[in-house]
Image (cartoon, rainbow, N blue to C red; front, side, top):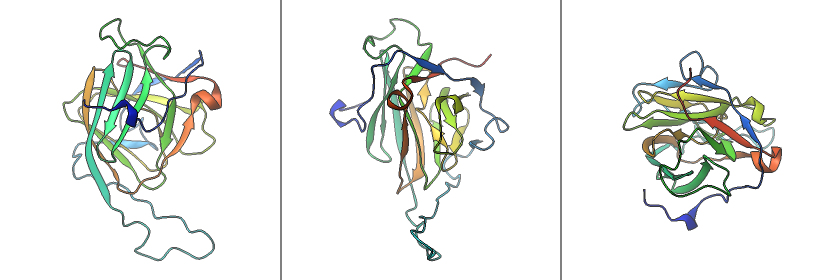
Length: 219
C-alpha cells in the first residue's frame, strides 16, 4: 500500500496504559440485528442515504437533501509491524487506526510476535448514510461496533468477527471502530454515501483507555 504518513487524516491520541477488552462474537444475521447485515451481492446492495435534518420547524422539501448518491472505491489496510494503517480511496483519506502493542513500544518490523489484539483509539458513525465493506480476497476481519447513541462508552462496543465470505453492511448512525484484518494486508470494496459526515469518540481522551479488539476466530 502506497501511503504518505504526512496525510494521515487524524493525529492519533496515545499515552494511556489501560485497555477495555471487547467481547468477540461471530457476525451473523442474528448477531448483527440493529447494527447491519451480511451481504452476498456487495456491488448492487442498496446503501441507505439519510435526508439532511431540518434546522427548524420547516420541513426539508421532498426529493432534496438526500441526492449526493453513493461513492465506492478501494479501501486498503496494511499492518506495518505492530501499527495498522489504511487508505480509503473512495473518500481520499488515510488513517492510522491502531496498534497491536502499546504505541510507544510498537515496532515496524514484521513477524516479531503474533498479533493478539488491536488497540483502537477512536471510532465514528455516519449520520447521513450506511457503509459497506467487502474483502476482495475473502480474508477474515474483526470490527468493533456499538448501537446508535451519542452517550456511547467503551462498554457498549462488541467486536464482530467476519469470515470474509460476505460483505458487512452497517446502518447509518452505527458506531464502528477500525476494520481490522487478521492478515498483514487486505483490500476491501468500500461503498458509502458520497457526502458523508463523521461523528467520533476518542477513547484515549474521553475514557483514558484503548478499545481492545481480539484478533482471532471466536471460540
